[in-house]
Length: 320
Image 1 (cartoon, rainbow, N blue to C red):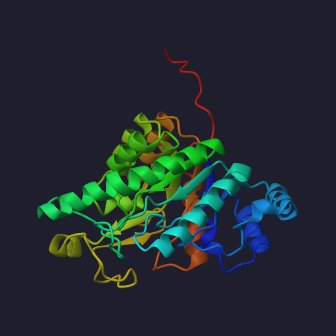
Image 2: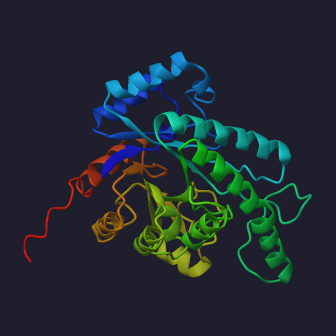
Image 3: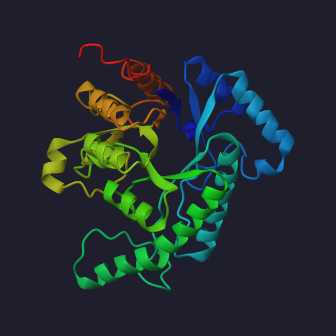
C-alpha cells in the first residue's frame, strides 16, 4: 500500500509548492482536485487539450516521485437544476480525460436528483414513508441515476478509467449497498472510494464495509479520514445532524484527523481487511479536522499512517 493526499487541502498553495511539500513529508501519491466542490485551484480543467502543459505536469510529478492516485471531481452532475448539472457534468468529463493520462480513477459523488421531474432542489431521502418518498426514490434511481451513470460508465471504460463513488450524506449513494446497487445497474467501471469517516456516523462498521465492497471487487480508491462521535449529543439528539461542522461542542459527530476519532483498534483491522480483499493502492489523506491546523492535522495523519500501512507483499506461509 501507498500513502497519498487529497490535495484540495493545498489549494491555497502554488502547485509546485504543494508537490514539494508532499514529497518532503514522504508521500507516494497525490489526488489532484478538478471539480466543483473541491475546486480547481491549479486550473487543470482542459489541460488534456494543452500537450505542453500536460507534459509539464507529468514532469513535475515524476521529478518528485509522486504518482497520481485519482482525480477528485466531487460534484452533483444529476442536480435537478440543469445549469448546475451541466457544469458539474462537464467537470466530471474533464476529470475522466485527465485520469486517462495520469491516474485511471476519478473520485466523485453519485449526485442527488430532485424528487420528481421539474424539481429544482436535490431531495435526500432517508425513509420510505410516507409513500411519496418511496416513489421519489424510485424516480431518482430508475429515471436519473442509473441512466446517467450507465452512460458515464461507458465513457469512462472507453478512456480506460474507473469511477469511484464516495458515499456521503446528502447524495443518493451514501452506503456500501447503494454503491454495489449502482454498479450492478449501470456498469462495472463504477465502484467505491471507500471513506470510513462517512460510515461511522451512520453506524456502519467500515471494516465490514471494506469486506462487502471487496467481495464485490469494487474498491477503486480509499480515503483516510476519521470521525469522532460525541456520545452525549449522539445519544440525546441522534446522528442526523445539520448543525455547522464548526459547532463542535453541540454536534453529534465531527470529522477528525486519522487516529483522533478511532485508534489502532480500528485502523489496523481496516487496513488488513483492504489487503485481504486485494486492495494494494493508495490511502489518500483527507483533512477536515476543525480542531487542528492544516499542517498539524495533515502531518499527524502522515506520521500515524506510516506505522499502520502494510507496504510489502505477503510472504509465503512457511509455517504449514
